[in-house]
Image 1: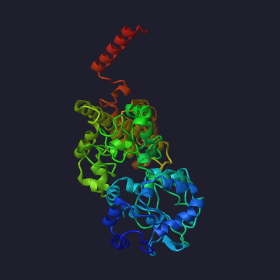
Image 2: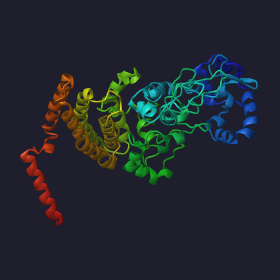
Image 3: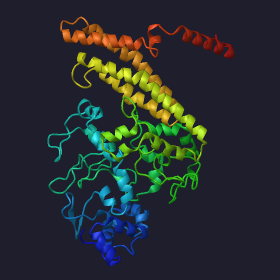
Image 4: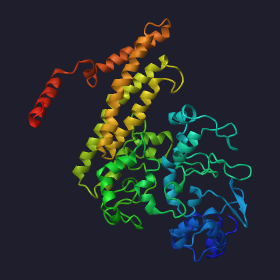
Length: 486
């Protein structure tokens, strides 16, 4: 790194020039003796031209440690996005690799997480929707001369991140910048964006600990964790006791520094009396409820070759329980997990597994274009929206999202849309002159009959078990007697 200021001991300067993470971490821990000359030059201009950025930096711990503009934005001349700015070589983007000069442990943990790989899943069905169904190639830039969907640029990419493209003049392509998506692929090859949670230029830990920060991405019809949290007793306690949360505390150990409520960070990242902070938010999660059928997190990690592939779900659950017991006794915690696991099993076994099999068997009878069929949308929303909401609601103790926004919607659309659409497909194709289509319809019909005859679904075809029907009738009579209902 060139033009390193001489405002600290020569040994530390030399090691910084060589990019030594350990030496820079030491410098960061004690701070620099004074602002470097290069940073002072930056400030002289940006204090006038970018007053808000200057003030934000002035509120940061970086400011108090004399870590300034140049220490973060300095670049090598060989960096893809490096350019000369007055007398310095800098880059606009401060990537995780840059942050690792001082925060090596945090970046290493983050790099092993699903967050850091969020841009890699943009080839999923979600992106087909944004690119093709919702969008077109109307947005043309230097990096995308053939065009790109503005729906993807302004929607998907802003949470998941995208590959930032550097144009020949060293400017950043407007389709890819600005972007603080959590899995952003940076010009230096690193993945992720620290400022997704620690917004520049204050880089506040307090802000990252606040649930609103997570809500930028974790909300909406398919993953409403923010709304679920607000509905839960945890979120209610946070809103009522925010003045007791000590979000700006340096240590911030649950049970020591605060106990009024947990935030997203408390449960998924922050320190307890027995475990340190982690920037891998998946290490306390014991179910991955993103897919149509839930999987254990180590299975999902293995698909991306993440370090978590070697950490079993039982270990992760124990880590989460270690958070819970700061406010709850172990019986409470164990019983919660019985409830949660039972909901995941109910959704998977009753709806997801038979639904996925039926949908796959229906594909030979559909137009071979994704989302060109009503059934495509129906099944997608059942698992991608409603099924996720049910599972996430149970995981975070949000009963309304578990039931009315979750299992009710799953059941309603499974029985009132999905099954009738399958029956229509069967009726339209079982006598088709094309033997392959007729055979596919026959196979689908047999499977549908088997599903509807199973214990979970036979009520739908009037075959409820007599003993169950008697229990339901007795319960209804007791209800009427209790409340005087007719």
